[in-house]
Image (cartoon, rainbow, N blue to C red):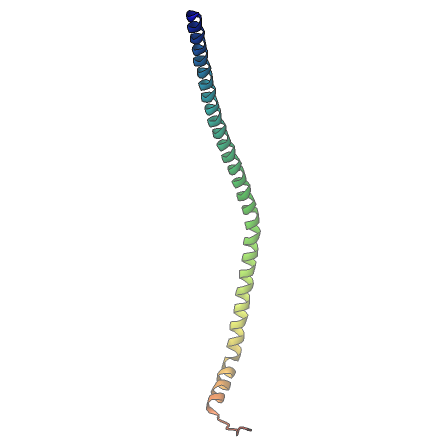
Length: 114
Protein backbone atom coordinates (compact mmCIF):
# COMPACT_ATOMS: atom_id res chain seq x y z
CA UNK A 1 0.00 0.00 0.00
CA UNK A 2 2.88 2.27 0.73
CA UNK A 3 4.23 1.72 -2.76
CA UNK A 4 0.85 2.59 -4.21
CA UNK A 5 0.66 5.74 -2.07
CA UNK A 6 4.17 6.67 -3.08
CA UNK A 7 3.38 6.10 -6.77
CA UNK A 8 0.14 8.11 -6.40
CA UNK A 9 1.98 10.96 -4.68
CA UNK A 10 4.64 10.89 -7.40
CA UNK A 11 1.92 11.04 -10.07
CA UNK A 12 0.33 14.01 -8.32
CA UNK A 13 3.69 15.78 -8.05
CA UNK A 14 4.37 15.15 -11.75
CA UNK A 15 0.92 16.49 -12.63
CA UNK A 16 1.53 19.56 -10.45
CA UNK A 17 4.87 20.21 -12.17
CA UNK A 18 3.22 19.82 -15.56
CA UNK A 19 0.41 22.19 -14.54
CA UNK A 20 2.98 24.67 -13.26
CA UNK A 21 4.78 24.55 -16.63
CA UNK A 22 1.49 25.12 -18.45
CA UNK A 23 0.64 28.07 -16.20
CA UNK A 24 4.12 29.52 -16.72
CA UNK A 25 3.79 29.20 -20.50
CA UNK A 26 0.37 30.87 -20.34
CA UNK A 27 1.83 33.76 -18.31
CA UNK A 28 4.70 34.15 -20.76
CA UNK A 29 2.26 34.11 -23.68
CA UNK A 30 0.00 36.65 -21.97
CA UNK A 31 2.96 38.93 -21.18
CA UNK A 32 4.16 38.63 -24.77
CA UNK A 33 0.68 39.35 -26.13
CA UNK A 34 0.20 42.37 -23.83
CA UNK A 35 3.55 43.73 -25.00
CA UNK A 36 2.60 43.21 -28.65
CA UNK A 37 -0.78 44.87 -28.07
CA UNK A 38 0.93 47.84 -26.41
CA UNK A 39 3.34 48.18 -29.34
CA UNK A 40 0.48 47.97 -31.84
CA UNK A 41 -1.44 50.62 -29.90
CA UNK A 42 1.61 52.91 -29.90
CA UNK A 43 1.93 52.51 -33.67
CA UNK A 44 -1.76 53.27 -34.17
CA UNK A 45 -1.51 56.33 -31.92
CA UNK A 46 1.52 57.62 -33.83
CA UNK A 47 -0.23 57.06 -37.16
CA UNK A 48 -3.34 58.85 -35.88
CA UNK A 49 -1.24 61.72 -34.54
CA UNK A 50 0.61 62.05 -37.86
CA UNK A 51 -2.71 62.06 -39.73
CA UNK A 52 -4.19 64.76 -37.48
CA UNK A 53 -1.01 66.84 -37.70
CA UNK A 54 -1.20 66.67 -41.49
CA UNK A 55 -4.88 67.69 -41.40
CA UNK A 56 -4.08 70.60 -39.10
CA UNK A 57 -1.22 71.81 -41.28
CA UNK A 58 -3.46 71.62 -44.36
CA UNK A 59 -6.22 73.53 -42.54
CA UNK A 60 -3.72 76.09 -41.27
CA UNK A 61 -2.24 76.60 -44.73
CA UNK A 62 -5.68 77.08 -46.29
CA UNK A 63 -6.82 79.58 -43.70
CA UNK A 64 -3.54 81.41 -43.32
CA UNK A 65 -3.63 82.39 -46.97
CA UNK A 66 -6.94 84.16 -46.43
CA UNK A 67 -5.54 85.86 -43.35
CA UNK A 68 -2.47 86.97 -45.27
CA UNK A 69 -4.64 88.61 -47.90
CA UNK A 70 -6.69 90.38 -45.21
CA UNK A 71 -3.50 91.43 -43.44
CA UNK A 72 -2.04 92.84 -46.68
CA UNK A 73 -5.26 94.75 -47.35
CA UNK A 74 -5.29 96.13 -43.79
CA UNK A 75 -1.66 97.24 -44.17
CA UNK A 76 -2.50 99.07 -47.40
CA UNK A 77 -5.44 100.82 -45.73
CA UNK A 78 -3.29 101.79 -42.74
CA UNK A 79 -0.62 103.27 -44.99
CA UNK A 80 -3.27 105.21 -46.90
CA UNK A 81 -4.79 106.61 -43.68
CA UNK A 82 -1.36 107.56 -42.31
CA UNK A 83 -0.56 109.38 -45.54
CA UNK A 84 -3.90 111.24 -45.34
CA UNK A 85 -3.18 112.28 -41.75
CA UNK A 86 0.32 113.47 -42.66
CA UNK A 87 -1.08 115.46 -45.59
CA UNK A 88 -3.74 117.06 -43.38
CA UNK A 89 -1.01 117.93 -40.88
CA UNK A 90 1.09 119.58 -43.56
CA UNK A 91 -1.84 121.63 -44.81
CA UNK A 92 -2.85 123.05 -41.44
CA UNK A 93 0.54 123.06 -39.69
CA UNK A 94 1.04 126.83 -39.87
CA UNK A 95 -2.43 127.59 -38.54
CA UNK A 96 -2.06 125.09 -35.66
CA UNK A 97 1.34 126.54 -34.66
CA UNK A 98 -0.03 130.09 -34.88
CA UNK A 99 -3.06 129.17 -32.72
CA UNK A 100 -0.86 127.42 -30.14
CA UNK A 101 1.51 130.38 -29.89
CA UNK A 102 -1.42 132.77 -29.58
CA UNK A 103 -2.90 130.70 -26.77
CA UNK A 104 0.39 130.69 -24.90
CA UNK A 105 1.38 134.32 -25.35
CA UNK A 106 -1.97 136.11 -25.30
CA UNK A 107 -3.12 136.24 -21.71
CA UNK A 108 -6.71 137.17 -21.00
CA UNK A 109 -7.20 137.20 -17.24
CA UNK A 110 -10.77 136.78 -16.06
CA UNK A 111 -12.00 137.06 -12.46
CA UNK A 112 -13.39 134.02 -10.75
CA UNK A 113 -17.14 134.07 -10.00
CA UNK A 114 -17.05 132.78 -6.44
